[in-house]
Image (tube, rainbow, N blue to C red):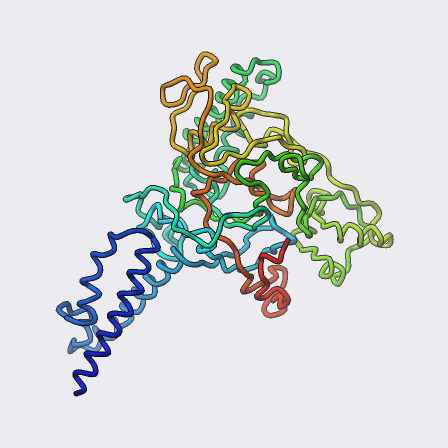
Length: 475
């Protein structure tokens, strides 16, 4: 009787697991997983394979060690599966979104919101992005690499959403640990300009000559890096899903024309709402130190004060500017920082004389939409066409050549987005490295599950008022 009850229980477990598993396969639209069904059947019903053979071992040490191995393997597989298709943890590492999201905020990131991606590099160590700790080697195997495909989700990226995505310019890196997080392309151009400090004024050149000049600057910088492996390491590449995770606010959608005029983002000629806690940098001259209580009230961090001490300016919200301006006993002068350079602005290979505060107009590519290509705009769209959509592209004799044929237009295969940080003068974002392709989108932060102030220790640093705050309410 007991044997029949146990068998009935096993059949119920098997059917439950099988239904859930088949529902999952239907969701991801992949029937290769059916090869696992016989093993599920064996685990619950036939039991031909000794899945837990070690429980019958006469050696206590074997039973003890293998029980831990079994638990660890199960946990790693479960974490890998959950992180891949449902949600993952993300911590805000920098101040680029302050004061909307703060350094030390831990986010619950939903992958179901926009639809999880089928992994590009499926063989990876769980809980790592690209590098194994301690060993400092790759945490993934580059083969196999699957084509981009996204499982159906609950919705799409919407304007002003805060989004987690893979860093587009992170496709190429210097392998030396101290340089891995730096923008490889900016490094190349920066070094190239140093090699040719007396180069021609690009504005004095024809369009074709200007494109060639910037190409030579980049090639010189890349050649210098390649020739100094003892400093920079080897030049390496990363697959899409192994690039650094970034979090920014989407301020431009596919098909929209974006322009920044005097710091305000315009979409199709209409001003987009600024985030409530948007920050810009201000030159501040103090009469005395800002009291700790006022710093806490205005959200001014030690990092902000360090910026003031080293650079003479600090990031402030409109509310903080108003409050400090009213404190004549503390502040002698406060003035918006309008200084801006144009050489570090996207596209790096076609200086448009745009700046972080006055940028564009620029059309954001949309899937299935075409754009006329000219020598004046090819620098803007070269990277999406070449790097993100896998085409050969070159400019030869004043003509644009794509995949060996002269091209006057191009139809995009993916949607693209424009991402910016709310800390507008302290954010490495689309103004510096361009569009975010749809295959780089990771997920949507849902709520802050933990928050700790890095300037304070232990429980004194816990930001209790931020715990379980929904990110959608941070506008």
